[in-house]
Length: 216
Image (cartoon, rainbow, N blue to C red; front, side, top):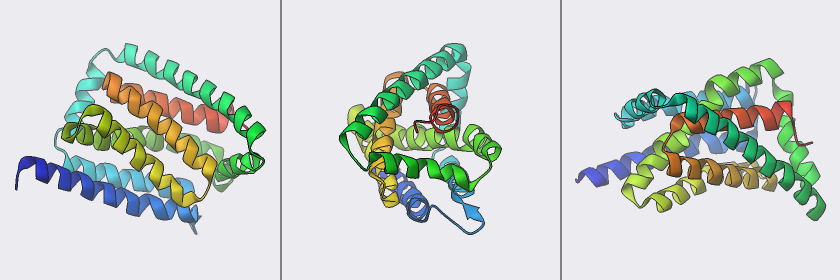
């Protein structure tokens, strides 16, 4: 078995695990004591633990990235989060004007906030969800797909996978939002190769669009 074959089998195996973890989450939106936020954070922790075993270079890439001009990457992350928020602000008005059910679908997305205290959501977003999603979807999956195929192909495949897990929620607005975010953060990683930049962008955008400046 060649190194490339082993590489892809490992990547596909971890992706299948991600689907098994995330699809039931979005389909049920939380069960019993495992509300959506605990379950989402738990899934991410499990995946990152598996990634550390599956890719022995993953942690080294993250450490090297943090040490290389971190201030510039933090600034770019903040600016990209602001730009993405503007895209969603405009899209919110367009979708509500074009589609009668868009308002109810958007409200359904924000209903996830009712499952947990705001402080817990903020802490999980900052400490686990925002960073963890980028470390998995871009730092592991997109990175490995780009190394197996061309950069753009790997970027699009990873974005498709990221979008697909949200289909189980049955909410077109949530799927569209995932696709737009996946394209934005995937392109950032393709262009700048920085997990720190992506983590800042994702985390700040999460806090802004979901809690500080909700689009409701």
